[in-house]
Length: 432
Ligand SMILES: *Cc1c(COP(=O)(O)O)cnc(C)c1O
Image (spheres, rainbow, N blue to C red):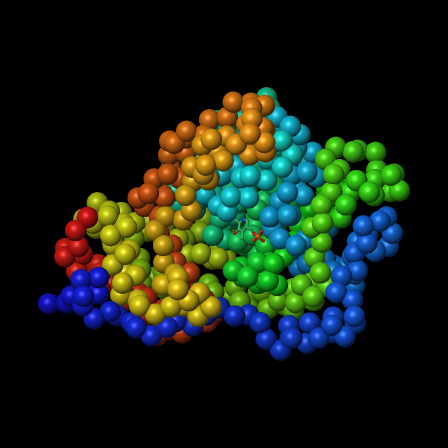
């Protein structure tokens, strides 16, 4: 009889897994070039030629705009700062409502708070996990000004339906495409599907420079206001003769020359990294879908998924065992760490992130100061149950993995799949 590792049996694998590392000689040379130049950042917080940054930043922005087929690309020091700048640039003001999703990094929902905007949570749909257009429309009030939508896991959002709603109610769309560089919908690239898109270049993303981000838009006014917010807007507006002072209290969201130079090299590698990633996903996904309790991981018609994460739905009724118990048993079969992620164990998780509104700042409505600002400018509902699909995915059905990619061999992928198969075949020995 086979004994599952979680019950003390021999695991499928004890050896560590490879780690995702996209850095090479090209990035090393790029960094050397910057060091040799003696200029690590050329930004000046005054209205001058250097207000827009140095050579590497400007070159990256040009190359990024070309690659993603947009008019403007602005390098920033994270997706987080890019989202804040985007919210400020579109003019979100105290008391304005912004529709956001519950299942992402928190900043995808908290960005409006920095300008007094009130996040209003709409639900996601349970196949591709992006905002559900019907839920979005049901949350619109006379105070709604914008939607922040996430191309979650690397899948583009439902542009046709969401953009139609935005048009009908005069809303701006901020697209958080941190997980979706190169994703597309009917050939149109993520980042350009809404009014302004924000990429991430943090260490965990498809391509990275340590910490960084890029804001893209085809709108001249938004681009200019993002550039101002990035670099001390309040000190620039007089000299630049900017007349719209709304939200023109700036930050330092500037990217350094080193990060820009690294990103320029990374950008050249993106297409190949995505293709290898998709190949790897297809291999693993075809195997896991042989298990009757597992569905999903696919893409909507016309969509290109770039698989930052490979998500699935798990049906506990078909399995006869709860998702959490099943996945814990799978993880026990894979005892190696992934390189660079030591201590995290196998990169398979049940649920994704907790619905953001479960976090204490929303449950207690305390963000800036002790009196509830800006939530007290409205009466938002953050009670448990407001996004039933997101909650069910989190507590019962969604699981995801990042154990695939260009760095995984077929044998590595087979080990991952075999862990699932072994647990499936012996699930009757697990107690829910
Ligand atoms: C990574 C990520 C962010 C944050 O990016 P940073 O560059 O670390 O600020 C925001 N939203 C989503 C969906 C992400 O995946």
